Length: 583
Image: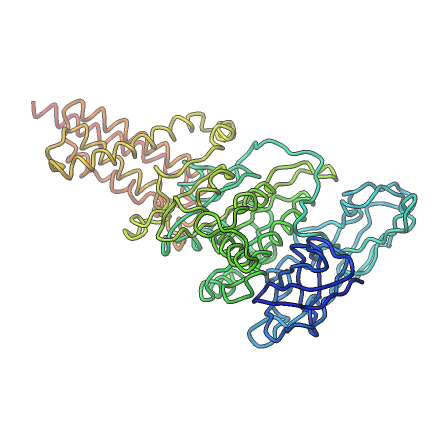
């Protein structure tokens, strides 16, 4: 074991002198409480390290011990349903309001194990060793970093502690490898896969404005920027609950304590709409509030993506919610400043862009080493100061994501949620997902989506004109455009996360809502061309029904949405007859 002594310390950063060999990214323990840290820079006879715990009380001369291994976390069946800090330490290991200094281990748990191989079988990296009796079912895998070998012993079916070996692997030219249910993996090293696959299907979020206008594919990446009070956290919680991912990883990175406490209080109480059981059974919460050590905030993002990759390798579709990457970038900036590095834009380190790329590029849909298909979808919230989307974190993030869901302060202040601005947002996954919507029975989805965006764009232009000349001075066709755009906002884009009826909208219900709204727009234009004034169209009962279609027609009333077509046609036919009689 390598040893060193602290020479200088400032907050989470220290310099230590040594005659032994240390390595960059090597995990270290510091001081009498064995605080966890990591080597980040080497020099002649000394190194620089960052500490992931409170360094109060450390002083020059205190010992530093190297582990010889990179910073790693324990990955096993006991993660689901837990609440951890940024280093994946359970929050029940507390000392007052904080984690006990130096706490690293979880309390052992026992799990049912059923072997999938037998003694004498040849085992390759990433292969399934056995099935673990959890809900959802998990698997014990041969470590991806191991070499192929022959199983000399496999445990019989039964219950075993998570750290207890269940298989022994004989590898030519190496010492035997014992495989337990819990394994360790370096957080900064992506887990290997057999093949990266192109996006083929969406991750259904249950939010109409996302699934209909700005869909995200399984294994894709999305940014969710927005200023204070625009609803980032609420929207991410809605996505965590209603998205069709198998496993949810929620990381609160540097968030305010009161917001994080709400998540910790409410999320464990939520019911999983897929199974009727607690949502926490397939969720891992990584809580790293703004008053926790700043260096641990920087590591929490890598911890979360490593956990996500672990479940991806088990053939699961994982959704990672990072709230927020701005706080993570601020941690990079603070540590960089203490290291004396030259600052870049807005004081952020010059390597901000590459660090963001390293994080977002670990998303993807893949073929795993075991032959299964899995995916990691990343949705990263951004908190730009004063809602400025030109600041460095937002601008660099846009280069690495495929979906950009821009939250607008003016829409949020108007109590319009989700407050996603339809003209500032985009999705590069649209073309790849068009065939999926066609297979769901909506061959016109791409054209319908384009029509809605064009209508909303026309609304912005006409509203500027109406503020000058007055809405009544506009031609009837332009007045109708504003009327239809308002209907699209109310019927399609507005959706309350607190509504028992409309907090989730299935693809089938989205399709029917979209069809009937498009039908209204088409028939209304025909009526205006026939001489009907837009004010008469605005007074139609069917329009008022369509404005509240999300609240009035829940998942159990999808068939009744189609009945609105008859009401719509009848009311417009009456308008046209009325116009004919007036002549």
